[in-house]
Image 1: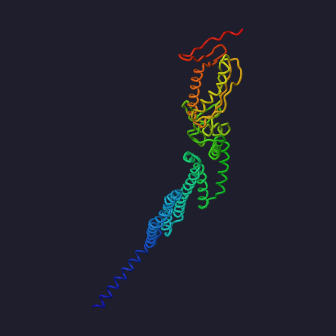
Image 2: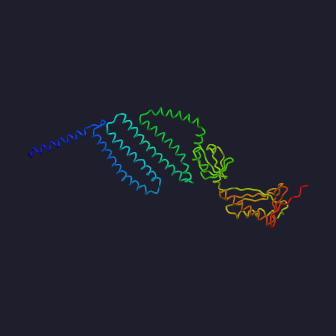
Image 3: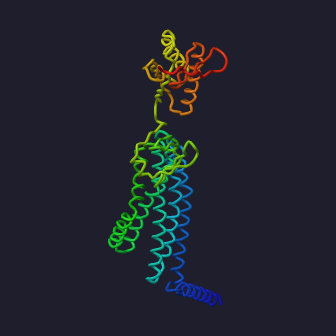
Length: 381
């Protein structure tokens, strides 16, 4: 009876094993259950390895990067982490599915889909790293914060090149005839270039402006008869805000062809102006005029006196020439200094009794007190 029970148990175990093997050998869509299980096992192991990689290796690298003084490696690591994990996850899924027996059409679709996904993330990774490197390089220069704002146009062109090259490599790896594609792109490029010469010219001049830096956002410039402060430098046009408030849009090609006066970069502003005094002004008072003007300018902030002379005789009176420098480029400082100097000259001349000649038949006499009067000069004989 004992032997009979043991034999029965062995028979049941054999039938169970046979049933399990039979189950594993069953085929669904040209693959056995065992092959499906192997694929699922590879997928689970891959997910486990990715989790270990993310928790151990990436955290270790993140700690090392955080200790460095530079912020560039932090940004590069963040972008790499952002795109490497999806690439690895896609690869794991592909390997697990690739263990199955697939029809040629399905296998082709799978290969193309995985290639496109991986190429997409790799291109994004390269684009992000280039943008970080370019921003770090530009940010170290003078007025780096403003210059970083201008790299958007550069990145558009760089991204276009990266995506085109990435697409070419992708098509080549997928077995397409790349030379035919390149030929078509070349012919199409020539046609586009001929049809859009002005646009392409503005685009290349944008690069000239970006790298040569004749002006930057925030600079006050004069172009021909246009004055304004630069608000935006784009791929095709540069926009200025004029002194009267309206926006002026100028093509980049026109800017590079024109003479641009950049007032923000001037170290000093040279100011020269003339006025006339009466011929009947006594000589002793005429001799005082250069000294009076010199003393006024030297006591005005942000100015440097150059010269003041009783320069010449004219039909309107004795011409006084004044030259001085504003030591800061700010236009408002210049106007405030000019106003202060003019008022002090009027005040000093009023004390000395020196009158201004306005035109040939009128003179402006500053009285010692009370309002100024304009008197008629006697007609010439």
